Image 1 (tube, rainbow, N blue to C red):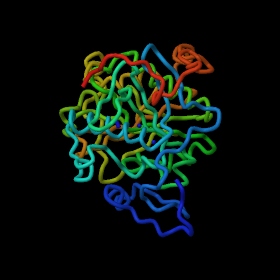
Image 2 (image 1 turned 180 degrees about the horizontal axis):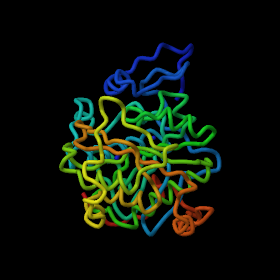
Image 3 (image 1 turned 60 degrees about the vertical axis):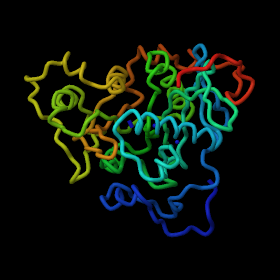
Length: 341
């Protein structure tokens, strides 16, 4: 599940706080020379690249856009908190509980994709009502990761071998995805994918990767979906990242012959089924994430492997849901009735 700064001078030694410190100790984070300190910088969210957005598309009252200001990133963090901690089983840190936002160091170096409903309002005490953020993804390009502290998924999987096996390929990490429960519909997911496809085309991305989650921390209870991914959707060797030593949980818990593919597909979360339909494949081994109450799998999707019907659906130029003359969601929006809580 898991989607997003001004630098000090001279560079300081890197100190990883909190969760990243644990990940680094496991060997999952490889810091680059001259990387900035892992802290929240004055400018939280980067501006979209020249010629891209911020509004990427619309379907009805829903709009997909890139965050361009810290307040928009915070709105994504509040949505993530609501889904991960209030609806699901994630255990918040004291800071997250106090802020009621899901925050980590990667938020400062990632781009954040938002789906906003102009027909609903977010109402907070002492704040002007705003269109409701109903979905989000966090996007981390390899050049961004190289300037900071690597990919987030390197905390669970060995990425070095697959990056070495694909030199010169532009890689995009997708993570921290979530959608507000009433909006978990085909329309919302389609708009998120339209935004990702537009971003991929603009930045000439060659492959997408990241971790996706199955709910629960007992791999034996997830034997059917894990085994299905292992036997029927395993990534080619050049893209098959392996779970880190000490965190690797075997996925081939059932034999290929014992798997009912129809039942296995039914047991998979909608997000993973969506990845499969588009053409994604999966890595070697699962990882149990007890903080979030999930079992994670590694997903990889080279652009060349995307099913042609999906390229045709969104358009080679990402023009199917392209926004023309779109306005910022922070102003000039109509005054629709209140939306879901």
